[in-house]
Image (tube, rainbow over all chains, first blue to last red; front, side, top):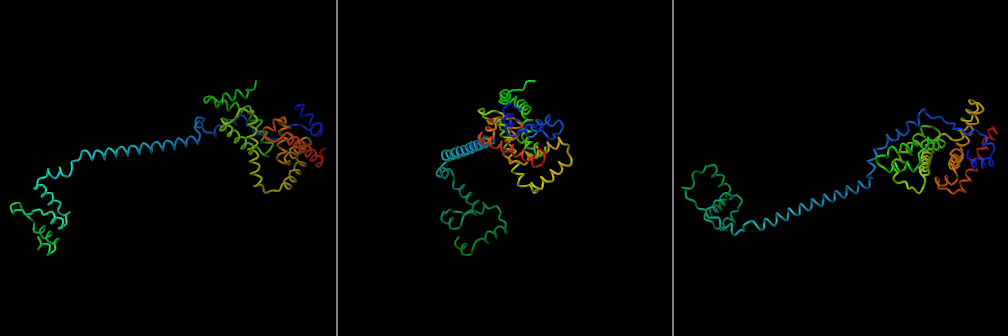
Length: 158
Length: 184
């Protein structure tokens, strides 16, 4: 026992100073030999500690922001490119109209006729008369279907 | 064999490739005193083992935060003491047997089963066990670990005057315990 502590105890309690100073506890055999292994088994490898959870969180947020920024930039650039391209390269409606012959126009209207109302076709004032030579064959059932779609007064008007 | 210095241990711990070696040397140097420091505060080996392992796991994870303006052993003892106090406080709530009842049974066993020298040691252990936590802690650190009041003060962050008073009270209570139980 250190002299300073011994002297203090001697003054306080000579009885305690005379007591045997032994650890009166049992410890398993070889306990201290294996303790460091047991502790090291419970901790992850050291290199995983280099990045703290705060750093990982910050990295994740920064990465997400960068990814979001890149994605937004790509969408904006693609949108702008597409928009500017459609303006400069597509022909105007007048150019298209001049390039289409009346015959082509009539054929187009005939193909898409289901999409037009009678009023619109009347406004266009297009001559839909066709010679019987042009009509190779019209099935009776098909003709009935077309006629059924018209009201009587509409047929009278035509 | 010459014991490795704290500085050498800390130098190894700063090098990632030498970290495990440094940690093993740290444990080799401090595991026994830290274990006994804990064991004297808790009753059985299983509890002491849990606390000592938790202590060194915290040391392993937190060594980078260790500021070298305090000594390594001061920092280790502080972690061990905090872990032990946390454990004791948590267990106090769980305890259902009253202290008086427990003491009565143990004193009877001591009287019946032990030789004179063993009986004295058991009474000594018992006298320390029933001290208030702070007095028990200070008595163990002073009497068994032979620390100076300055060292204890750094670990427990309690003034030296208060520590001296706790130690003196503890010694007097232990002496009284022996007087009451007919051993003095």
